[in-house]
Image 1 (cartoon, rainbow over the protein chains, first blue to last red):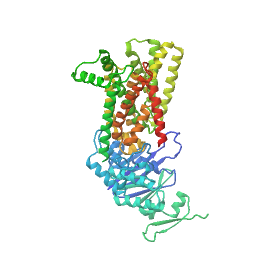
Image 2: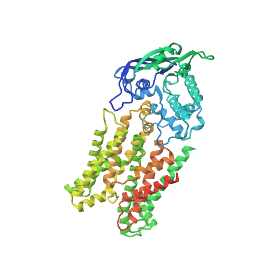
Image 3: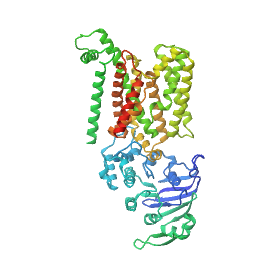
Image 4: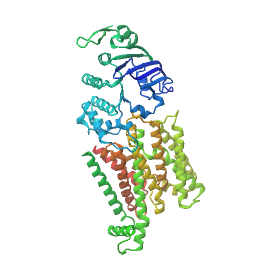
Length: 262
Length: 336
């Protein structure tokens, strides 16, 4: 059973004043099956974030189709999508100071009407989401006082409180030290929720993803298992780097060693 | 525990507001002892107690000071509420009810009518002209700020500021060229004052503030989400543009009504939300009621200062809020 299907997406950044990304998405197709951990890799500015934005119904593609559970997301409301897709973004702007439990409780927003109050069930969900990311003792701390790794875990807890069927993560391991990178990805993997994540660190992508998509200049240029995708030729063509690829001695997934001498 | 503390705080602030309201009635160019104030209130509200005060005192307390105190509480509550939600939707801690162009639109409306039309419908001419000006200015800001069906917070703020400047330039030009006696009437209104308060005038601001509070409390969750940013709001199932538009409309209508009656009272809308956030945090279901109570208490007392400091003259309350508020804020920043 597939959870998310992107078919031949095309999308252009609006206007010329947003000149940071002057690329376009073209013919991008992608599948995420139920319970599958799918990674999206590609160089800077290749269109990873744009593709994800199309997937979580933030950017509307000019062409092509985004389907969740065989429903076109643009025929459904933003609320319908938010009840099914939870997103962990790269940044969390926090200008005014919310408490950790208030940030996590935001995840209940799509399940609530205008004057609905938090029920006991909501409070339990918030608490168990915090517990599953190991942040249960930080409930009443100010979000702004947390470290980068703790913030990222709280945002993941918010996504869990949303009770999604699909998780979308935009570079979830950025700003984390190795321990938290591994912990976060292990945690996401253990959840067994269908996941689409853009990942910068190719060794992490190889270690955790069931399948990988490679995006370059707005096009999907390769897809498959980490063994199929991560080849010396692909790294040279797409990332313009030389590397050795062998097998991780303990776990059996591909291991990339960069060749740093010219 | 957190909720019990919050409930206690609300009760304390509510009690403080009630006590402030009663005590404030004693102050003014003619002092009335608090026990007399209290007996006049009981007599008027419930009809019991012996009448042992002068008609003058009764007149001052019941017909002048009570409506004025109520208007002050309403304006303070309204401005604090508007400031809090505008700061959230624009994610700008300096957002303020007067930044959106509404107040300068109101000023221009007032100037045009006072200088060139005259008081065609009596005392209410100026407030009505101001309100019309406020609404026109709101529409201009909206028209300029929205682009391709989007309504971005930065654009909204910048358009508000730009439209404000143009409107103020026009108003100042008219004032400069116009008759100086009429100009000073407008100037006095611009500096803010609760002198227009009459019992029969209170219904409109009361309904406005109450309705605004209810609507905004209903939008507390979307407000929380917007505070986290546009993308986060969308991933939580909100239409960021709609929420922003609704908040902008509610805020502008409320500001329009309040400014038309009481002039431009600065600093309440900017400062009270920050103090309230220090007390209860930024979560809007908790924040908004506290803003309302704090705003009311603050303005009731500032009005006491305004009518006693240079008695028998009224100090324009906008001057008093700015001076007291600014100093208080500086103190708060230094302590931090």
